[in-house]
Amino acid sequence: MSIPEGDYEKGAKLFKTRCATCHTVEEGSGKTGPHLHGLFGRTTGAVSGYNYSQANKNAGVTWDDQTLFDYLENPKKYMPGNKMAFAGFKKADDRANIIAYLKEATK
Image 1 (tube, rainbow, N blue to C red):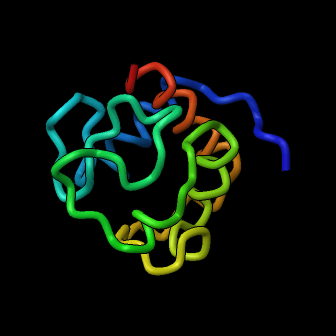
Image 2: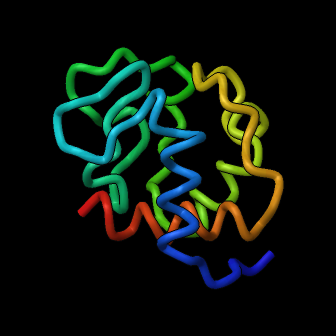
């Protein structure tokens, strides 16, 4: 499936309500989940100091638009055994909006 064009503002709102409980976009300030600063181009399990699951450490996925789009639909299905409790964004537009936000906010 091709990725729809995302909307930064809608993505920011979704991040605040659905992701910010566990993640931050600032470097070095993770919560329950790792921080997402520098996410694009990073390999799974690479944030120093965060205790990743073996599934995440061994996945070898490099985060980009497509891998995030696929992962965020259903994290447990995409990467069986990972610790993320989030069920996913079923709507393609929601995933595209989150990606649009993260591309700017995690630089």
